[in-house]
Image 1 (tube, rainbow, N blue to C red):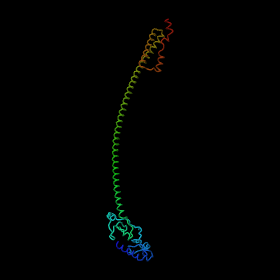
Image 2: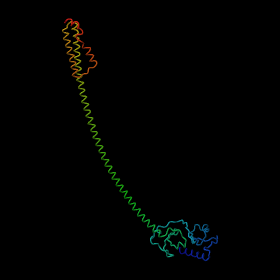
Image 3: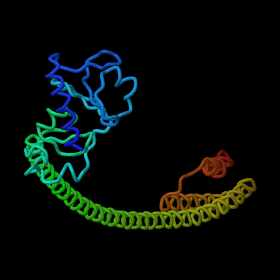
Length: 300
């Protein structure tokens, strides 16, 4: 197909040179022919291309190639990567195919590009080779950087695990210390509580004993008071009957009882309440008060 297209475009250029106008003219629209329709196998002008040959395969054939807007700009993987270092030779012109046509999906040389005015190529061979080398170098650099990042991440992970283990061990040790301190505090509180209860029991026992003694002493004092009241009543009767000597003995006995009461109070440290003081002031009257005039008048 390339040979046939080359032959036809050569014929067209030859006719143009013979005509002397630099290009043929379309007989229908009387416009220069700048395209060749491979589907209809005839040269066409721009108007014919837009009207009749819009969906056909059209190649520009002028001497100043312009970029053609191709629909398919992808190259087959096998074509793109087949022998990228040593390019194949063109079977028509026997020159290195240093470009790729995105329409035919084949390698082409510079003569094919100039003859068929095909500008839909990817790139020439030398930039492709340098780009491949640069891409390979960048890929190796990227791979090395990725390995470095992975190594750093592994180190950070190991360091983090080690730090976590250390923190866990310190946490366990701290928990053990807290538990030990708690147990010691509980033991101290229990000992303090027992000691305080023992002291309270001791003080309470002492107070109870003191109260018991005081009660016993108070009962003794009450007994003495009762005895003194009886003696006082006898003293009053004897004094009224004129038995002064017997009244004197009763008065002396009353004094002795009062002395015993004071002694008991002093020994047992009994605080006199208001009632007791009143009892002493009212019950133990002066034995000579009733018969004072009569007794002294009889003695003197």
